Length: 454
Length: 121
Image 1: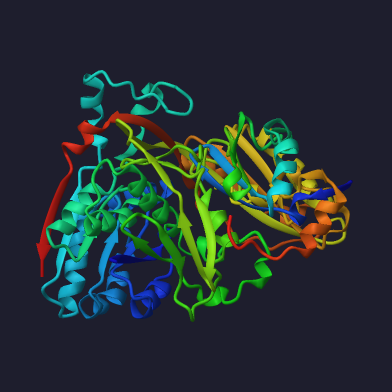
Image 2: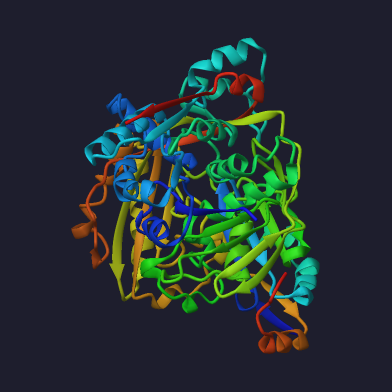
């Protein structure tokens, strides 16, 4: 019986390619799939493109290709990535360039475009679509003039079309995190548009693979001390059957652990209603899923159900939302917390006196409550050291930059043993996110697949 | 009856979407899942995250894997890319959830210590 083996290569922009190389070498996979994009990634890529018209895709795509291209012909592997980001055509060009440089030929690289809808907002408004925020219901007027990007989350179908045209590599923009993983299954098994359970199973497989080691022991909240090989984690591999059922494993001699306990944590990651996980291709129901340990580092996944796909697609837009200025300074024992609190107080007095009005002034004590907030338990008296972190939110970069200048004098003027000041870093741009829904026909009519060859 | 921290009996993982954080909480077996169902109410979780979560907390049940999924709204001071929080992606909500204390019958805890890991759920 035919089975398709898929390896995970990337969980985010900045991930290491080493585990994917191990999978290519020893994982016996036909497809290696990437998820390069998070909400924040699009914003980073927009900034890159503003500086350089040819940029706007994930910069590590060249390195990834250099590492994996040698395996493509030898092992008959195909690569699917959404690392095209805001400039998928630029990414396609870069891949072709790298292939040429490596002396590789007979390689078909496809690109999917049409997810970028930033220029189409007026058209959507003319059609009378309400672009209200899906979570808050607010109208878009307040952010419309500050939009930096707007991309529709598109599904697996255009990637399938690229595979049908013989593509060895498919690069896309804002396809969903799971689309790259589902597409090969539709292509290989010929799953129909309404085989909801199978499609749902394919999406769920993608969900378990798209955050790389998060299903093979990375970020494991159980007995994480028992996980071996954090220095060389293996990324998940799925072996999928025609009926949609699949087994998760990894390359045996890489680090990590695949058990019910490591897999189930990833099952709910970034999921809201588990009976209705919305994707462009199908609505996924996880409430009947069954997990089984069937061998060392092998978990079988069955029981995923699907419901008809939604009529609209999610569009996520990013809008400029001011700047954050941040300072971090440390204080040592004795009275570390008391000293840090005093400096917080002093800074706030100086802000007031200098008439520096910020939208927000935030104080955290790193080593005490910066990651726990109000949930930190009170044992502050004996801390060896603590780092005061203060952040302000300002409308402009200039205003935000003024904040950090208040700190250096306190090294001599304030409480004793202030240290570990890492210098004044440049304010960072903040980006608001606006999610809305657009009828799928409006997006799908504009999707294009183009194949180029070296 | 013993008072235990979730840390000692549960797994958890959190993730973000916009200004929403979800926290999956996983029980080790059916019996403790029942205890979670009774005691880990959305109200209790909302109270636990007071100051961090400004909006509603919705609870979803997954009896198939003995897990609860808590969807916490207005949980990131605006969302990952505009929040001034250090944990701007809500990665630590999972571990902070494990600070929560519940009451569990002693015999359930004893069983837990003797239990071999699940073959299937």
